[in-house]
Length: 415
Image 1: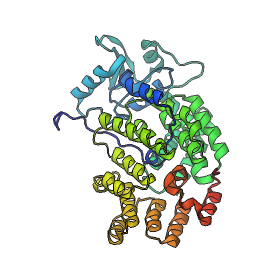
Image 2: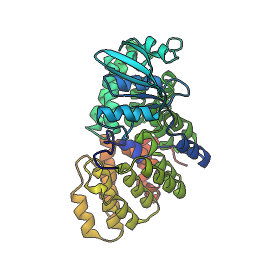
Image 3: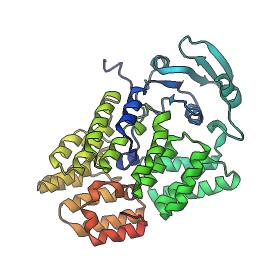
Image 4: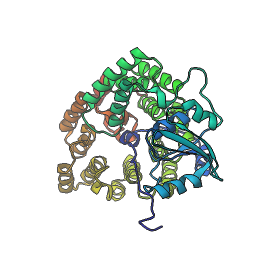
């Protein structure tokens, strides 16, 4: 494929999904996923509110959705978008613009329906589906307060902005939204994230996540955060159902398809992690999240030369270098390349999580600085700090009594 024809990546894997995500599934399930990944029920082309419509469709059992907001494979040009959607969809193609939405039949392109963008019932009826009971679609679900809360959660997901401020915004906005309408699924998700990262109220957070998934069963974002919750509390085996929801409805979303490799790493199932990443290479060539995941795989096994080799390209990629650089710096420290480790340490971007920055100092033998940064991570409510509890990278550190105090603050229980 020529460089010009290669689909332009529209979205990178969320950072939290890279640091700790869960999907403990058997080999048969993984094979089934890869074998059926192209059978997309509905392809949603880009238009205003297209992402909301895609999320609505995930509520229906058995519907597999693809859209430009969830796949790095989706082309950037309009002609390529239509061709890509036509090739994948087995039921319907949805497009919109100018305040209208249209539905075409996949295969022969027969026009089935055109209506106003807010005529959700008409749209779904044309596709042979309807909202059940008092269900609401994403096109009509979210209050402005909910949108504010969801925006804060997405920023946390990407490590963009001040975590403490984002959590405060998510808290205030979600509380306002839920007072007005307790059926705001995204507001329940935002409240759960606050309970996890700011309050460490794990039981209450799980209740909110269950509520969010009851309102929108196929919501991949809520499923991922539920998986974060379970693995942070050493319940990786229970997290399979949560992540399988996301994989089942959006199999071509790299932010859902790549992270299971990290689950295998966390469970020390090295071969499955390698196999999964090899498949991801075929599906999402050049995605920097894959190289980063390989770096974590090598690090978990104590293969420090392998870490350096895996993330060599990523440390120059502005999108992931704040995660790749600390891995490389710590690897050099472990290999006694102290000068190189300190050189890379000086290059760490400001948004590098304090806990990952601290790992470099741990590698250099400077435990006091490591714990100072760990305390800073607690103060800043670093999202990665909670989720890294599941990682084997921290196994040697957990033997230090001072680390036990960190777990006490987080109220994370370990076996």
